[in-house]
Amino acid sequence: MARKTTSEDSEDVHSASDEPPPLTTAQAVAVAVELFVELTSKQVQGVTSLEPAEDGWQVEIEVLEDRRIPSSADILALYEVEIDLDGNLVAYRRTRRYARGSTDIGRDRR
Image 1 (cartoon, rainbow, N blue to C red):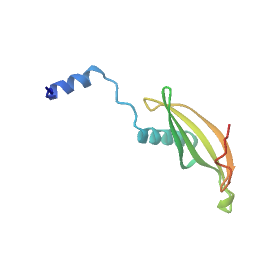
Image 2: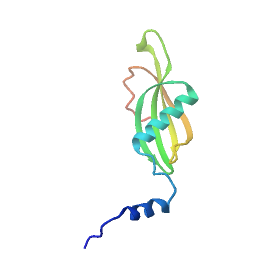
Image 3: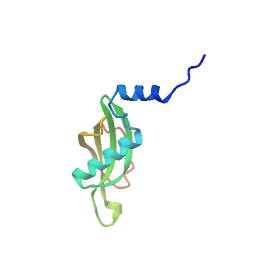
């Protein structure tokens, strides 16, 4: 027989742990981009990957590294940004620089 859940039951479950719920994927991306821009002031072009890490998330961000004229000559870069489960920046590092429109972006970078 199924047991009916009451509001008291759900309050007990939530009060047992005062920890906030873990970041969703959308929240992890938004936090990583916000913290990265705050620190570097670089213009984000997009997010290219998101992976769960041991204690948080690893987000790969594509940024405009060097604006040129014409824009097809811009230099872009990929950065790996690590955040913990609480949404704190743990580390970031540039992994690659390349010209906008490069055709070898899909190649293994490591």
